[in-house]
Image (cartoon, rainbow, N blue to C red; front, side, top):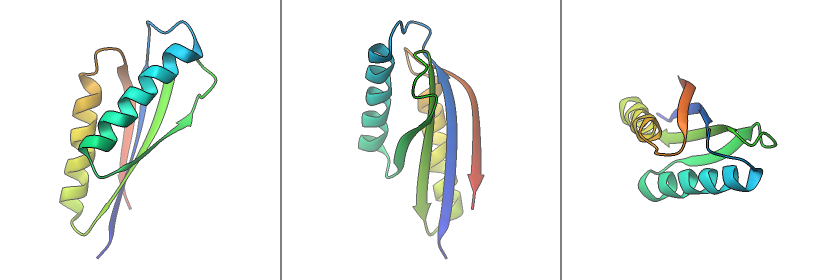
Length: 94
């Protein structure tokens, strides 16, 4: 059976003073996640706000516990990011 997990993460980059600063952090997060996890990731909201990042992650697999574990591990990585502070998230299994 196909299992789909969706994670939305809201982060703040307090040190960002421009969209260029923010985009550098977004690119860094996306590249790290794509290199380590088999998920899709996109910036899904607040594209024009220079201190706010909203990322969406989607994972697909045959085992819901594995999909959930992968998304939880992404959350753990976001919590320890040196430049972006995780302020809110939602995780849903479809």
